[in-house]
Figure 1 (cartoon, rainbow, N blue to C red):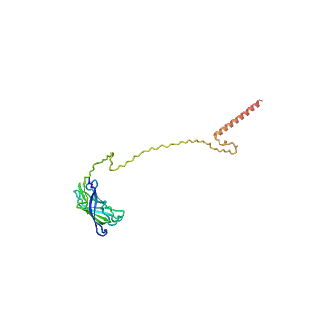
Figure 2 (tube, one colour):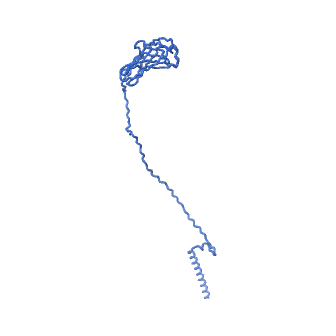
Figure 3 (cartoon, helix red, strand yellow):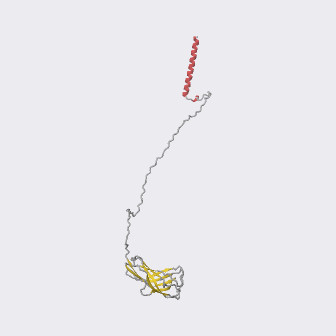
Length: 266
C-alpha cells in the first residue's frame, strides 16, 4: 500500500522575477504554505504512479498578485523533483499544474495556486521517496515568482511502497455450458421430405339423354293416290297388302259363287 502524507505547513520565500512582462516593483514574501503529497492507494512495478503535490494558501500572509491577472489568464506552477529508492531510477522529474481564474484578480488579491502532478514509474517492488523543493509561479507563461523552502529540506516529503499488486480477494466464475464448439462450423444438411399428393375429389355428373325420332319425309307415288308412305314401306308392308287384297278378292269370289248356286236351285 502507498503511504499517504498529511497537510504540513511549509514556509517558502517567494522572490519576484525580473524581466519583460514581470510587474515591478514586486515585494519578496515569506509564505507559510500548507503542502501535501498524495499518492494512489496502491502501486505496482512497471505501472505509472501519479503523485499530486497540493499547495494551499494560508489565511494570513498569503502570496498576493502584484498586478492585475485577467479572468482568462493561465496561472501555472512548475518544479523539478528527484525521486529516490531501489525500485526507481533517480532522475529529475518535472512537476507541473495550471489553473484559470475565470475572474479578474486585482493587485493585492490572493490568487489560487495550482496543484502540481509528479508522474513516476517504479521498476520493481520496494519503497520510493519523493521530496518537494522550490517551484516557479507563472502567469501566461511568464515567471512572476520563484519560491524556495525557507530552510534546507523544508519542502514536503513522502515515501510510498511498491507492492506485488496481488489482489487480496479473487472471484471465480463457473461455466455451466458443456458443449465445445468445433473449429470449423458445421452447416446442417437439410433432410428432403417427400410430400404425398392429396387426391383430388372427382365430381360425377349424370346426363339424361332423350332420343328424338328421326323425321322422315313421305313421298307420294307417281300417278297414285296421296296415301302417305305406302310406296316406301318396304317388302314386308307390301306383303301384308297383297295378302289382304287376295283375301278380299277370295271372299268376293266365294260370295258370288254362293249366290249363283242359290239362283240355280230356285
